[in-house]
Length: 158
Image (tube, rainbow, N blue to C red):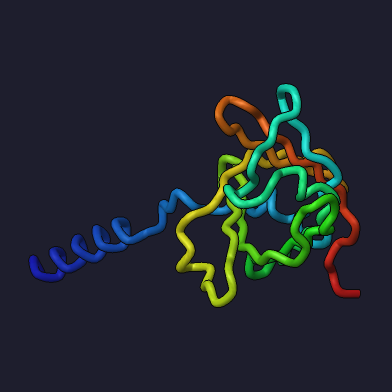
């Protein structure tokens, strides 16, 4: 009887110690309206115009008019540069999610990268304005950069 009681206590302890209290738990309600195709309409700054690198790789202004596609079922996507004014052209793959604090986490994926192996990403504050607009904001060296998106299509199959 004591042995059975001990096994029960150990089982309960194991269950609770292994349960997920992950700091990367997703905010499913915030993610719900994001799948589909979006246009990054503009990039704004809290101060006068400065040159800022988005994702530590691209001039933030080069992302203006880029097209973003978000896939919900596996939290992947890509964006396509318009290739204007000396900016790169092409498509960049990424993985994304919105955590419980409405922080949008974006990880760029290079050719051959597995999303679960990429540990470095960029964090933004996610602000849903409407079902057709959202903003991502980040603070870099005391300067707030805001990316303004508008929806082009829902991404749902008809």
